[in-house]
Image 1 (cartoon, rainbow, N blue to C red):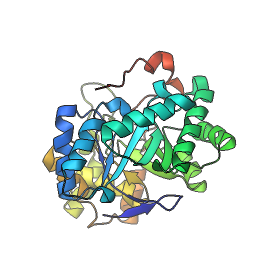
Image 2: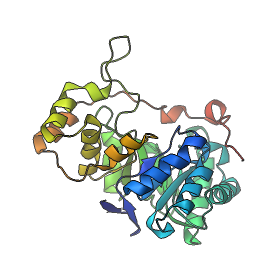
Image 3: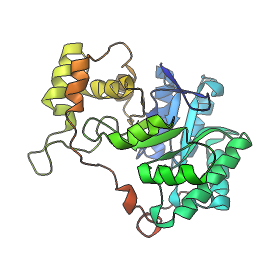
Image 4: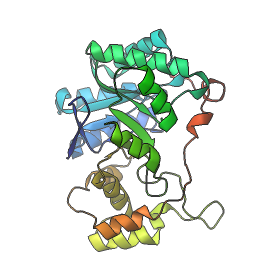
Length: 295
């Protein structure tokens, strides 16, 4: 496993297991499988509803806690200074951890950015007191990051973004690089994004001829090629799967390298199409109703 160094010196495994949309009753087995296969980085979130199962799998594993990097996210309904501190307490209790390795804000809240800033200041307090080892953000665009940096003290260690060859967000990646913020890719394999557009004739990104040709040349799967593309460019990637064979496949990406021409061919797949929600459209009215399970 390759490690990346965050801007405060903390080491983070480059590849982790994401558990977005993994049902709680499947999460425990998925995390157990991942840890057995050599994963040492698990990405969850309060709003996923599976923090408790992530924590159970880590405690039951033979892998020492200090070897597992755990990251979770605060949801927009818990933004605000005191609200975010309480959210941390709830997440830490569900995970069964005294310290969380990386805590990030799940989305910017452009319609009430003061709440976003207050939430981030709560993260700064948690960092200063040692409750978390690093703090960051997710889905923050350049204008959100600029406003955040102007109003706070600690530069985010991570910005978790939708990044894959079909949606590359180069302006945000460049901004993060210039400010020492590590880019972390969610949906690094392309998720539900289709490069041919909507309709019955659409093809999965894993069937893209450019990707399958490169995969065939290396004896790897298309998913492995897409993950390698991200890792080779210095990003963290957190592919999601609950299937043991996919979990095993996704970590097997450190024994080959893409050529410069192959990277260029993947770079050329940019579609400009975002698969997830537009960050500017994330509001409490539209998304705040998504409830965080208490149990």
